[in-house]
Length: 69
Image: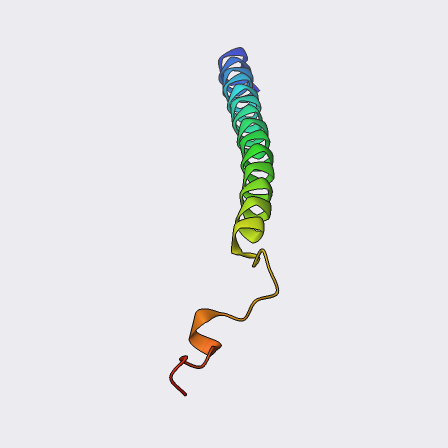
């Protein structure tokens, strides 16, 4: 193998290693963001569940009979 060919392979390998590291960093950052968004979603769902819960045991207005019956 010639020195020129070896140099080309080493250059290609260095480029690929940098690309892999850059992609790995991007995946790590995306996973961190997914984790943060998942926590926010859980908190939002919990708040929504509290809002949707009836505060009393009174029947829903649609289920009540009108007073003239």
